[in-house]
Image (cartoon, rainbow, N blue to C red; front, side, top):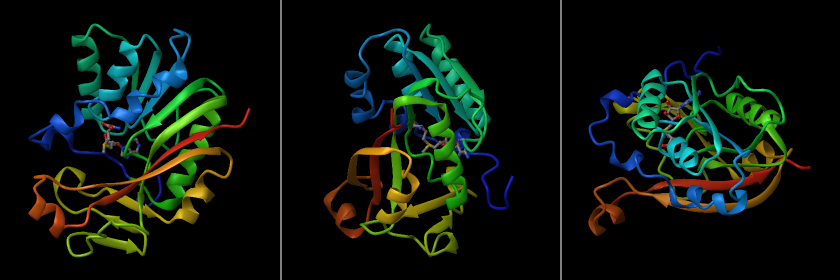
Length: 229
Ligand SMILES: C[S@@+](CC[C@H](N)C(=O)[O-])C[C@H]1O[C@@H](n2cnc3c(N)ncnc32)[C@H](O)[C@@H]1O
Protein backbone atom coordinates (compact mmCIF):
# COMPACT_ATOMS: atom_id res chain seq x y z
CA UNK A 1 0.00 0.00 0.00
CA UNK A 2 1.21 3.50 -0.83
CA UNK A 3 2.48 6.05 1.66
CA UNK A 4 -0.51 8.14 2.81
CA UNK A 5 -2.98 5.55 1.47
CA UNK A 6 -5.63 4.88 4.04
CA UNK A 7 -5.10 1.78 6.19
CA UNK A 8 -7.94 1.81 8.69
CA UNK A 9 -11.02 3.80 7.64
CA UNK A 10 -13.50 5.72 9.76
CA UNK A 11 -13.34 5.20 13.51
CA UNK A 12 -17.05 4.46 13.71
CA UNK A 13 -16.90 3.26 17.34
CA UNK A 14 -15.91 6.79 18.41
CA UNK A 15 -18.97 8.41 16.83
CA UNK A 16 -21.44 9.43 19.56
CA UNK A 17 -24.43 10.31 17.37
CA UNK A 18 -24.78 7.90 14.46
CA UNK A 19 -28.20 9.11 13.34
CA UNK A 20 -26.92 11.02 10.26
CA UNK A 21 -25.55 7.71 8.93
CA UNK A 22 -28.53 5.49 9.63
CA UNK A 23 -31.08 6.84 7.14
CA UNK A 24 -30.39 6.20 3.45
CA UNK A 25 -29.70 9.18 1.21
CA UNK A 26 -32.79 10.25 -0.81
CA UNK A 27 -31.32 10.41 -4.36
CA UNK A 28 -29.51 7.10 -3.73
CA UNK A 29 -32.86 5.49 -2.84
CA UNK A 30 -34.37 6.86 -6.06
CA UNK A 31 -31.95 4.73 -8.09
CA UNK A 32 -34.44 1.87 -7.68
CA UNK A 33 -36.62 3.64 -10.25
CA UNK A 34 -33.84 3.11 -12.83
CA UNK A 35 -33.14 -0.46 -11.71
CA UNK A 36 -36.67 -1.85 -11.56
CA UNK A 37 -37.62 -4.86 -9.45
CA UNK A 38 -35.67 -7.71 -11.03
CA UNK A 39 -34.22 -9.96 -8.26
CA UNK A 40 -31.19 -10.72 -10.48
CA UNK A 41 -29.98 -7.14 -10.09
CA UNK A 42 -26.63 -6.88 -8.36
CA UNK A 43 -25.64 -3.84 -6.31
CA UNK A 44 -22.25 -3.11 -4.75
CA UNK A 45 -22.08 -0.66 -1.83
CA UNK A 46 -18.46 0.50 -1.78
CA UNK A 47 -17.43 1.93 1.62
CA UNK A 48 -20.69 0.84 3.23
CA UNK A 49 -20.15 2.52 6.63
CA UNK A 50 -22.86 1.44 9.07
CA UNK A 51 -24.78 -0.16 6.20
CA UNK A 52 -27.70 2.19 5.53
CA UNK A 53 -27.56 1.69 1.74
CA UNK A 54 -26.62 -2.00 1.94
CA UNK A 55 -29.73 -2.61 4.05
CA UNK A 56 -31.92 -0.42 1.83
CA UNK A 57 -30.93 -2.23 -1.39
CA UNK A 58 -31.21 -5.66 0.29
CA UNK A 59 -34.76 -4.66 1.33
CA UNK A 60 -35.57 -4.08 -2.34
CA UNK A 61 -34.81 -7.76 -3.03
CA UNK A 62 -31.58 -7.13 -4.95
CA UNK A 63 -28.39 -9.19 -4.58
CA UNK A 64 -26.20 -6.89 -2.52
CA UNK A 65 -22.46 -6.89 -1.89
CA UNK A 66 -20.67 -4.38 0.29
CA UNK A 67 -17.22 -3.62 1.61
CA UNK A 68 -15.40 -1.16 3.82
CA UNK A 69 -11.85 -0.78 5.06
CA UNK A 70 -13.16 -0.24 8.59
CA UNK A 71 -13.69 -3.51 10.51
CA UNK A 72 -16.22 -1.75 12.73
CA UNK A 73 -18.22 -0.75 9.62
CA UNK A 74 -18.22 -4.34 8.35
CA UNK A 75 -19.40 -5.63 11.75
CA UNK A 76 -22.10 -2.94 12.10
CA UNK A 77 -23.42 -3.63 8.58
CA UNK A 78 -23.53 -7.38 9.20
CA UNK A 79 -25.36 -6.99 12.49
CA UNK A 80 -27.89 -4.52 11.00
CA UNK A 81 -28.63 -7.01 8.18
CA UNK A 82 -29.03 -9.82 10.69
CA UNK A 83 -31.43 -7.79 12.87
CA UNK A 84 -33.45 -6.90 9.77
CA UNK A 85 -33.56 -10.56 8.62
CA UNK A 86 -31.81 -9.64 5.35
CA UNK A 87 -28.79 -11.07 3.59
CA UNK A 88 -25.90 -9.49 1.71
CA UNK A 89 -22.23 -10.30 1.26
CA UNK A 90 -20.14 -7.89 3.34
CA UNK A 91 -16.35 -7.93 3.15
CA UNK A 92 -13.46 -6.09 4.70
CA UNK A 93 -11.31 -4.51 2.01
CA UNK A 94 -9.59 -1.66 0.22
CA UNK A 95 -11.57 0.23 -2.41
CA UNK A 96 -8.54 0.23 -4.73
CA UNK A 97 -8.73 -3.57 -5.07
CA UNK A 98 -12.21 -5.04 -5.29
CA UNK A 99 -12.60 -8.75 -4.71
CA UNK A 100 -15.19 -9.24 -7.48
CA UNK A 101 -15.12 -10.51 -11.07
CA UNK A 102 -15.47 -8.17 -14.02
CA UNK A 103 -18.78 -7.18 -15.64
CA UNK A 104 -20.97 -8.33 -12.72
CA UNK A 105 -22.79 -5.34 -11.23
CA UNK A 106 -25.77 -3.30 -12.41
CA UNK A 107 -25.06 -0.57 -9.85
CA UNK A 108 -22.11 0.48 -7.72
CA UNK A 109 -22.82 3.15 -5.15
CA UNK A 110 -20.16 4.86 -3.13
CA UNK A 111 -21.55 7.67 -1.03
CA UNK A 112 -18.91 10.01 0.46
CA UNK A 113 -16.15 7.43 0.08
CA UNK A 114 -13.88 7.60 -2.98
CA UNK A 115 -12.45 11.03 -2.14
CA UNK A 116 -10.95 9.55 1.05
CA UNK A 117 -7.75 8.99 -0.89
CA UNK A 118 -4.88 10.51 -2.76
CA UNK A 119 -5.56 11.22 -6.44
CA UNK A 120 -3.77 8.04 -7.63
CA UNK A 121 -5.96 5.87 -5.37
CA UNK A 122 -9.13 7.57 -6.62
CA UNK A 123 -8.05 6.74 -10.17
CA UNK A 124 -7.40 3.10 -9.15
CA UNK A 125 -10.74 2.84 -7.38
CA UNK A 126 -12.68 4.21 -10.34
CA UNK A 127 -10.92 1.78 -12.65
CA UNK A 128 -11.89 -1.09 -10.29
CA UNK A 129 -15.51 0.10 -10.31
CA UNK A 130 -15.39 0.21 -14.12
CA UNK A 131 -14.02 -3.34 -14.18
CA UNK A 132 -16.76 -4.85 -11.97
CA UNK A 133 -19.69 -3.00 -13.60
CA UNK A 134 -21.64 -4.64 -16.42
CA UNK A 135 -21.56 -2.72 -19.70
CA UNK A 136 -24.42 -0.24 -19.24
CA UNK A 137 -24.09 -0.41 -15.42
CA UNK A 138 -24.33 2.72 -13.24
CA UNK A 139 -21.84 4.20 -10.80
CA UNK A 140 -23.43 6.69 -8.37
CA UNK A 141 -21.44 8.60 -5.77
CA UNK A 142 -19.92 11.80 -4.51
CA UNK A 143 -16.69 13.77 -4.78
CA UNK A 144 -15.58 16.78 -2.75
CA UNK A 145 -15.13 19.98 -4.75
CA UNK A 146 -12.25 22.40 -4.78
CA UNK A 147 -13.68 25.12 -7.04
CA UNK A 148 -16.91 25.80 -5.23
CA UNK A 149 -17.89 26.56 -1.65
CA UNK A 150 -15.72 24.14 0.24
CA UNK A 151 -13.64 25.58 3.05
CA UNK A 152 -10.27 23.80 2.84
CA UNK A 153 -9.81 24.04 6.65
CA UNK A 154 -6.03 24.46 6.49
CA UNK A 155 -5.72 25.32 10.16
CA UNK A 156 -7.11 22.13 11.64
CA UNK A 157 -5.61 19.64 9.21
CA UNK A 158 -2.43 18.42 7.55
CA UNK A 159 -2.08 19.78 4.04
CA UNK A 160 -0.53 17.38 1.53
CA UNK A 161 -0.97 19.54 -1.57
CA UNK A 162 -3.30 22.17 -3.03
CA UNK A 163 -6.09 19.59 -3.36
CA UNK A 164 -5.41 17.10 -0.58
CA UNK A 165 -5.51 17.24 3.19
CA UNK A 166 -5.41 14.70 5.96
CA UNK A 167 -7.94 15.23 8.74
CA UNK A 168 -6.52 15.42 12.22
CA UNK A 169 -8.79 14.42 15.10
CA UNK A 170 -12.23 12.89 15.39
CA UNK A 171 -13.66 9.87 13.60
CA UNK A 172 -11.79 10.73 10.41
CA UNK A 173 -8.38 11.12 12.04
CA UNK A 174 -5.62 10.23 9.57
CA UNK A 175 -7.96 10.03 6.57
CA UNK A 176 -7.04 11.83 3.34
CA UNK A 177 -9.61 14.02 1.59
CA UNK A 178 -9.16 14.94 -2.07
CA UNK A 179 -10.94 18.03 -3.43
CA UNK A 180 -11.68 17.79 -7.17
CA UNK A 181 -11.68 20.50 -9.78
CA UNK A 182 -14.24 20.07 -12.54
CA UNK A 183 -11.38 18.99 -14.86
CA UNK A 184 -10.53 16.17 -12.44
CA UNK A 185 -14.11 14.90 -12.52
CA UNK A 186 -14.08 14.66 -16.32
CA UNK A 187 -10.64 13.10 -16.19
CA UNK A 188 -11.66 10.49 -13.57
CA UNK A 189 -14.71 9.46 -15.60
CA UNK A 190 -13.16 9.55 -19.06
CA UNK A 191 -14.09 5.86 -19.56
CA UNK A 192 -17.71 6.45 -18.55
CA UNK A 193 -20.66 8.37 -19.94
CA UNK A 194 -21.43 11.15 -17.47
CA UNK A 195 -25.23 11.30 -17.16
CA UNK A 196 -25.61 13.71 -14.28
CA UNK A 197 -23.48 15.97 -12.13
CA UNK A 198 -25.14 17.88 -9.30
CA UNK A 199 -23.38 20.33 -6.98
CA UNK A 200 -24.51 20.57 -3.38
CA UNK A 201 -23.10 22.03 -0.21
CA UNK A 202 -23.36 20.32 3.16
CA UNK A 203 -23.12 22.40 6.35
CA UNK A 204 -21.91 21.14 9.70
CA UNK A 205 -24.66 20.95 12.31
CA UNK A 206 -26.21 22.52 14.34
CA UNK A 207 -28.08 24.08 11.44
CA UNK A 208 -29.19 27.52 12.49
CA UNK A 209 -28.96 30.66 10.37
CA UNK A 210 -26.04 32.16 12.32
CA UNK A 211 -24.04 28.97 12.03
CA UNK A 212 -24.73 28.45 8.35
CA UNK A 213 -23.88 32.06 7.43
CA UNK A 214 -20.63 31.97 9.38
CA UNK A 215 -19.22 28.79 7.84
CA UNK A 216 -18.62 27.48 4.38
CA UNK A 217 -20.09 24.08 3.74
CA UNK A 218 -18.51 21.00 2.27
CA UNK A 219 -19.08 21.27 -1.49
CA UNK A 220 -19.83 17.93 -3.12
CA UNK A 221 -20.48 16.72 -6.64
CA UNK A 222 -23.05 13.96 -6.88
CA UNK A 223 -22.24 12.04 -10.02
CA UNK A 224 -24.17 9.44 -11.98
CA UNK A 225 -21.99 7.82 -14.64
CA UNK A 226 -22.54 4.80 -16.85
CA UNK A 227 -20.09 2.23 -18.22
CA UNK A 228 -20.61 2.31 -21.98
CA UNK A 229 -22.39 -0.71 -23.53
C1 LIG B 1 -18.41 9.06 5.10
S1 LIG B 1 -18.41 7.33 5.41
C2 LIG B 1 -19.77 6.87 4.33
C3 LIG B 1 -20.36 5.54 4.66
C4 LIG B 1 -21.49 5.08 3.76
N1 LIG B 1 -21.13 5.10 2.34
C5 LIG B 1 -22.72 5.91 3.99
O1 LIG B 1 -23.11 6.67 3.10
O2 LIG B 1 -23.30 5.82 5.06
C6 LIG B 1 -16.97 6.80 4.50
C7 LIG B 1 -16.72 5.31 4.60
O3 LIG B 1 -15.70 4.97 3.63
C8 LIG B 1 -14.81 4.05 4.21
N2 LIG B 1 -13.53 4.13 3.52
C9 LIG B 1 -12.67 5.16 3.53
N3 LIG B 1 -11.59 4.87 2.79
C10 LIG B 1 -11.76 3.62 2.31
C11 LIG B 1 -10.97 2.76 1.49
N4 LIG B 1 -9.75 3.12 1.07
N5 LIG B 1 -11.46 1.55 1.17
C12 LIG B 1 -12.67 1.16 1.62
N6 LIG B 1 -13.47 1.93 2.42
C13 LIG B 1 -13.01 3.15 2.76
C14 LIG B 1 -14.75 4.52 5.67
O4 LIG B 1 -14.24 3.52 6.55
C15 LIG B 1 -16.20 4.87 5.94
O5 LIG B 1 -16.93 3.77 6.41
